[in-house]
Image 1: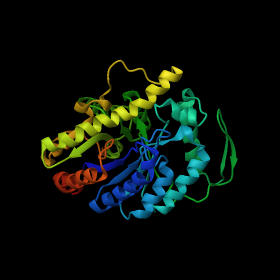
Image 2: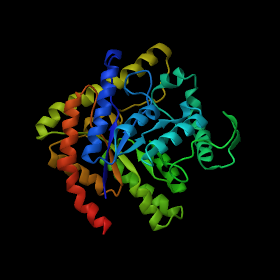
Image 3: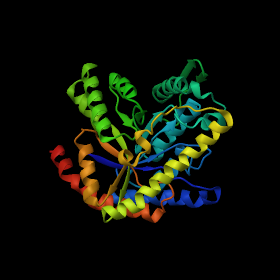
Image 4: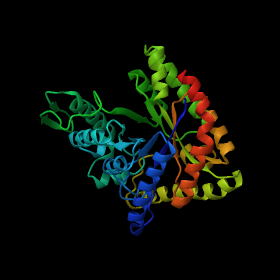
Length: 354
């Protein structure tokens, strides 16, 4: 029962392009709604143009207003950069605007871009602790009719009941990001679904198998294991064209340019400040064409999606517009995917529903 979604994570290479790219993002969201995409995922990144609309909570309001059916999710909201009560309040409003179409993806924040923390005056080494404390506050704010009283490491809060009340009870659907196997297994212990970052198909198989095993070993019954698998997602960059050769021609240069764009600011900060959040001795899977990019004709891409389907995961987060790729090229890729790849999986969906 594989679901397909679009990660709307579009770069703007210079400030003069920002307004145009933001408009194009909204048009892409409307196209996805028309074509039957399951979820539009929104990112959060700051100061570098790698995510044109920057703020997923603000942009989600525009997407929800412009669409009718598609769900809107965060992949992810960088919780460590926000005041938890303010973020909980914004999400409650979005849940009402979308009448339950919101999926709240939560994470600590970037593991790579130190300047995002510096720009908000936050020590990046506090990110995980801030995230854990903030998540607990948000969950209490959404569910506690008597309000929130909290005294912790980062926040001292005494607030009445949060308003508006959530549309979804007890609160909007929440999913967490896990960039490592350790993180995925920790969520398995809690009986929670997760979002996996870009990995090779081999690592994807291994990690999902370990996650499924950990769910069972933690005492979760077969129904809960099935729910967690069905609500978990893996991420891939995807380019579809009429032929394999055409997909390679348009997809590989765009993917490589995207990776270079994301690397430049980190390297500039390292040269100026000597700060690097992650030391990588070999290029990770997320930046290599062979492991991070699915590209080809509809038949080729469908075969790759079938490999993912066999892992048992619930859905694929597809990034269609890569780097400097023009909007019209990405939109055609989305059309081909939804009209000639996604239908190949409909019999599986029908069989699963019977």
